[in-house]
Image (cartoon, rainbow, N blue to C red; front, side, top):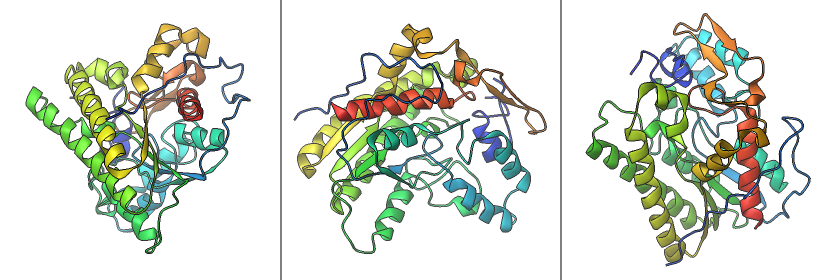
Length: 328
């Protein structure tokens, strides 16, 4: 891999950047409303079926939690303040994008509050891709533990929607052999099973679980030639569907699965309908030393903000599709 292992996210991580029974059903909207304005939201807001959204995940879902932890890391001398300054300059309000994230659009569409535990750099277990001690136990399972501790012995809200988002960083490793990739995919699914089970054991009843991100289309995967990404994605998604179906029966809960790839198939088949002119390049480029960062002039025409994560326009479409699925 290049010095910048995975996009500008790893600028924040390692100061390196690239330039470059019944199976739960997945119902992606057959068509998404075109937009006259990148921030426009559809008027057919789904009838509220949930009291709030409680979210867990990584960079795709972190609405600013990492900022507070990052300040702690700076105060401890674990990392340079320059990374935080770069983030504040080129990312939107603590999000790793140029606008609101999909989970925020989802909560807005559902008309409920968002309680977000997701943390940038998280993996599906307890660890993080970030090297600083302040980020220990900030992985998905660590976030679940934090939520349960915050309950102070009370039960979880049974009307809340518990959102668990897949974690792309689990794919990246030094070993991309077929067996290693398969083992990592299996471990992610096992961690998701643990996450859902732990939440159900404290009273959670309703879940939205994201299948794996559509990595094979990302500029990073295409530029690096990671053919193993499809192997990882297919293995994880197949097992995830089967395991979530078992949990529905065993725990008497409801699990919705969101299929990012199915949504992107619609977008890639007709990008103009959704306002995109560029599905291959990423809008933001940063040098390895972060001294030079450029942003394209028309970010809302790009699907990719950097080489792995989506723009605000793409996040908007993802959030709207999630809300539409839940309203059916």
